[in-house]
Structures are given as structure tokens and as C-alpha cells.
Image (cartoon, rainbow, N blue to C red; front, side):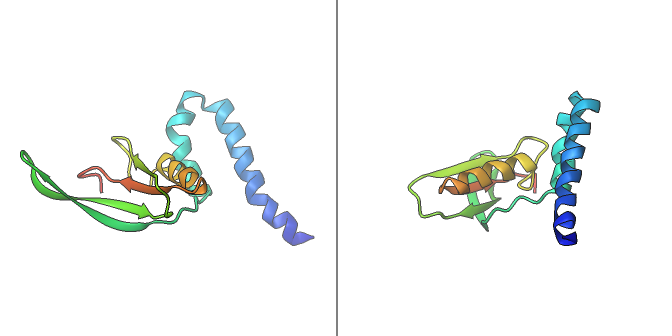
Amino acid sequence: MQNQAMTREPARKLSEFRKRARHSLHGHYWTYAGYFLSRLESIEITDEPVLIDVSDEVSGSFQLEARFHDAKSDRCVVVFHGLGGSLESRYVQLAVRAAQRAGLSTLRVSFRGAN
């Protein structure tokens, strides 16, 4: 009986945090919620690191870091992070998890200099 109560406790705390944040932080919630929620709740995704070689006339040759999951599907969802984000940003991980759950291959790419 005590184990059930212990397993419900983190979910209850997370739910309470979300509720309090929505009511007290308003606009600031959307700025900070992803950061705090990523510390409280892990997002399970499966992919492997890859390097993408890029050759550009202006910048020359360089490599982009990425993570790839091959679901053996004929479609691949490519996810880029925002300007202040990274491959580990919550919204990137949520998008990748949704695509993987739908049976799609995924590629999340880090912008040059963001890694």
C-alpha cells in the first residue's frame, strides 16, 4: 500500500506544480515551464548520435551534430531547435517522441555553434 502512495507522489507534485505555475506565472510560465518540467519529468526517446558533413561556399566545410532514429519507415521527421535551444530542449524531445510513437524515423539537428 505504501509503494502505491510513493509512486503517486511525484505525479501529484508535478500536477500541483503545473497548476500553480499556470495561475501564478502567467506569461512567464511559458518561458520557464519547459526548463523546470524537463528537470521533473524525463522524456523517453531512442536515437543515436551522427555527424552531418556540410560544405558551403561561404563558410567552408563543417560538421553538424545530430541524433537519428531509424524506425525503418519511408518517412523521417526532421526537428530543429529554436535559436536559444539545443537537441535537449523539451519541445524538441516532445516532437521527437511523438514522431517515434507514430512509427516514424527521426533526425534532430543541432544548429552550427549551438552544441
